[in-house]
Amino acid sequence: MLAARTGAVGSKISEESTKLRKQSVLSVGSKDKSPKRAPENATDNQLSTSDLSQLRARRLALLRELEMNWYLKIWDLSSEHTVAHTTGMPHRNLGKSGLRVSCLGLGTWVTFGGQISDEVAERLMTIAYESGVNLFDTAEVYAAGKAEVILGSIIKRKGWRRSSLVITTKLYWGGKAETERGLSRKHIIEEIVRAMTHVINQGMAMYWGTSRWSAMEIMEAYSVARQFNMIPPVCEQAEYHLFQREKVEVQLPELYHKIGVGAMTWSPLACGIISGKYGNGVPESSRASLKCYQWLKEKIISEEGRKQQTKLKDLTPIAERLGCTLPQLAVAWCLRNEGVSSVLLGCSNPEQLIENLGAIQVLPKMTSHVVNEIDSILRNKPYSKKDYRS
Image (cartoon, rainbow, N blue to C red):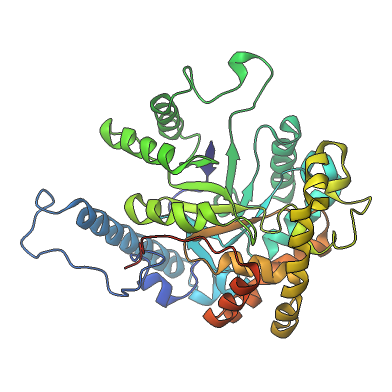
């Protein structure tokens, strides 16, 4: 379960460009650049569900535009003062919600409270923040709760405005007792939706989403929310990288276009497999060398793991031609998917984070020709019978 906490209305809003703001009422993957117009004489009762959704989206986009113009005028600023302009970090809507998140976020799994020291964690957050990242992801189970504590302590120590950040956390594995884990009293979807609606109504979070849920479960949660006038999820956290594509490329697009659920993806380098560090075995300082990650080591040295390393070597010339590293190519490949709102990075040192953030510069080079060239090497593009963007 994912809960997103952000600032209040009136905080500085980051936009990619005026053009993107004008198009923000459109679906991310829509081919039609002009939103459908509702009949002039139609009332809300006469409009179809899709028309109502588009109307609400247009109203929300207009409100966001007015908020930003108001803020810039009050403080005598121009669009050049926005985070997106000064750092070059693009921001996208989280699904079809009004929440704007940096297209790259920083995750804390394994690293915070575990693989790295608190000092390194602070250095990583500082680099990310100064690079325009406003999304930081954690969970109550990461390092038995230490990751959340470290994250909060760094934000307090740095004195960053809370309204400038989006913090996401996840619930489920909390404690050892039966009453300390799970998502609700009965662990059923209706109870989960009620619980998250209560959390938001109490001001403890602004949005909620899911993590590693099936498309059917997400759709059921949405249906329950609509039936009982509660708050539906706005995103799904899913694993997505060169070797894991089915869910994000086939299942989630349908949810996005039908109910507005966006994708916040994690592990763009497949737990380091795509970084290139495992080309000649498992280094002692790597994640796969940790005792609790024996499963990752077995995956790397397996026959399938060796095939993946061969494919990565074949992708290297493409990265060199684009003037980037293999990890940068992999992250940019994830971002080229218009249905992905944000990609969460997991880094154990500043150099790795700086390298991965450089994927932003590679994104404009991800042409259809380059993507097709990558697909011809991977040979794992999932097949979808429907084109939800048509």
